[in-house]
Length: 148
Image (cartoon, rainbow, N blue to C red):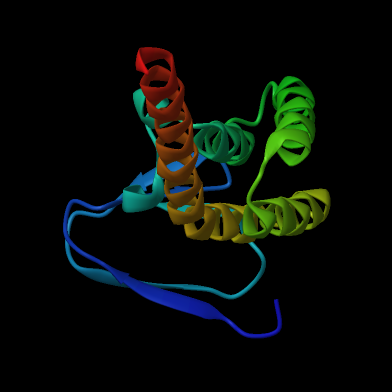
């Protein structure tokens, strides 16, 4: 890290740092002077929120950050998920983003990988309705042709 990272937390906020959970009892400013893996509470995804392939990848990386044990298992799951998503993603922005995520993870830059994934969530959402609308219009066309 070439410069320090500083942010402010409200009273009662939690911060996840290198697998530890910190809770502040009053408003505080925190400055990291070296490299650290951390998550702000509002960036933490709960298991039931991992409802799409990108969110599942996010969740696995989050686990790698927060749990010291089982990292190898999480890494195997992540590699499998990244490979499958890269092979099946129709959206070029998502495919390119997954390459960047893979690079960050290789350097243990988990925070940056999660940041990239959060930026891809909207692209994943956009591509699904188009695909569903396309399938629906094909079905409607086939139904109309069958009725003639």
